[in-house]
Length: 197
Image (cartoon, rainbow, N blue to C red):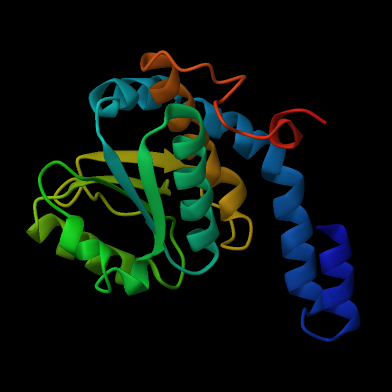
């Protein structure tokens, strides 16, 4: 992260004030991670509700799209549930056809410049009776009219939010896998290079 800050400053893409702000936020990150881990009980209860789901859809925009991909991959790897990560902006190009009252759809939706668009995507899923789970930031408006469950992480700058938003997704994959009786330490059919150095 510090190398990225340095390069941003050297290339003139990051002014001094923005650089200081990012350094301050980086320093806060360990405490924010600790606070994020406090939602584990809520995630475990959520896992009990969805452990028998045959499919999951994970959606995110911008820097949150890779978080959606990683969340889907982790669920697939350790619980053997079909899960797909997809850009929320492209939801209408395929995944929307799969959404019904049995499909859990997990949105990675912290407060950022695309939050309003992600909420619009949630409305589209809701109109098709999809079961929406939102990983969102503390301080965001109440989404209970749209979602079945809200997992709130501490607010931070958008660039660092993936560090926090991935945690509930990893916990969810872990707890679903355990509930399904899967060996999370030795997932089947994964090469040793993935699980052992």
